[in-house]
Length: 424
Image 1 (cartoon, rainbow, N blue to C red):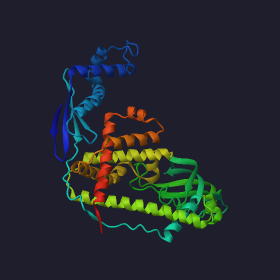
Image 2 (tube, one colour):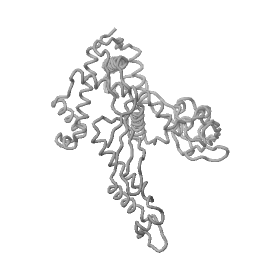
Image 3 (cartoon, rainbow, N blue to C red):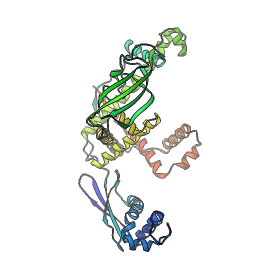
Image 4 (cartoon, rainbow, N blue to C red):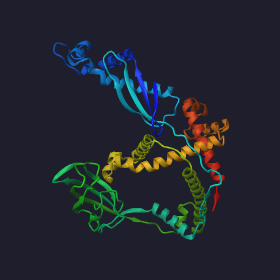
């Protein structure tokens, strides 16, 4: 493997697979595909590789063979590389010829060096932590709304009502894929649908059949629908309104308190704890932002793209837990994967820079994880997953253990710079 350093912390790895190993991969590709190819005079799956190559050319299996070779060859190069690679590779084929080694390049981002500026004694604004009566009332209202009942009503739909509807969408008189659902629960005013859809249900009643006219956004993810006017045929099955319980001793009793005053005192205590924690986090964020601003680093675009893609994967997992797919989310919001990635890039860059700076602080101040701290992490994991500590340790490899140590060091760096900061 050869490494060529490029500008902006990028590098090109040139990776070679021997002609012998590539031929083995070609044979694997032949074995994988032989049942799909029919040649007169041979039973399906029984055509010799030489016959196939003679008929279709010796390169017939080269593309599949290259795809077989690349993952293992790149993984080996990754392990051998003394530089820290921080992005997914961009693969390009260099040589793919009969009887020659298979050569390809992997263009990757390398971890940037950080030149720290001022990170001790940073000045930040003090965050107010006083809990007001208004704060308490707002928190109690949220709790009351959480206990609200959805009650069916026989009246026109209002903003905030929960409706149960069937709908089917049409563009130019033709139904389109993904535009139909039955017994769909839609809260009016939630903004879950295309702009204008929910507003046109206000004033309608259960049992009504309504035609809703909307226009898909110009940047809608489906080119067939983007910017197009659409008609949704909607059947309203049910209308429910939210009924919020009164704040009285019965409500306090349900919350586990004797009186409303006892309940309010507990709400105040919890709000004070929350505000204190929020203030601590706000101070940490402000300090880190100031340190990043004063540091110098050249973050490669490929590193940002990789982190933004990870953000999208994390968001997709959250949606999945709610019973939605990423494609459904994009359909309902009129967004696209490309738009999501672009919107995520500034957050990804901010997250990357913060981590790089904190790693540099940890290195400068020699902040490292102790064996006791690592053992505590294992104990916490064991408790979380209801497993024995020894079992957890047996499942954690060296790479994962090093990552745990890095996370501990970063937490120490956060505490260090925050403790050394000054409030204005």
